[in-house]
Amino acid sequence: MDLNRNFPTQYSGLVLKGKKMNSNTSIEKTYEKGKYFNGYSVGSEPEIKAAMYFMIKHYKNVYAYINIHSQGRVLYAGKPNLSNEFNKISSSYAKKISSINKYKVHGVEYEKIGEGNDGSATDFMAELSSGLSFSEITGRLYTNKYVNNCDCNLQGNFPVITMEITKDWTSNPAYFKKEYYNQHIKELFFELLKK
Image (cartoon, rainbow, N blue to C red):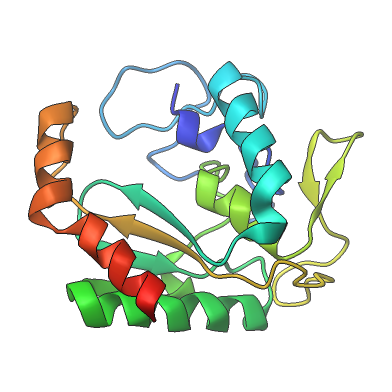
């Protein structure tokens, strides 16, 4: 299971009408590299429940949320199902990061929704930042409005970024550690705190 697709976001695991399922999405267990299987129900895994508890408890005190990922040395900023204001805030912050580490910024046009592979940690935190609330009926975050008409109150009003720090994908933890130090990620965070 891809734990980073198990968060109970608005579109987690759903395929919206008129969309084709992303070729990387799997609806059943798979060990195939590059396939996303988000589990049999959203928010089901103990690791995700622990992460959700932490995020929900602390998101109102967050200045910026940066999710460190692998592969590409790029920054992703923006979510098409959230407000233009949220996307501007995230894009602006990604550009600050890019001015330090020179990673390319990919904006909202690089994000997809409703192709079966939603439900990442950044989806969850972005939706919390934008004021989406938890539905006990659906068991996921939700809003009554859709793309760019989000009835979000931006109560958190903080940027949410995915930062891909490794050049290549691997499951070797030593490689991630090496890339973390070689890409000076700790120093990047200290520099961002100064700004």
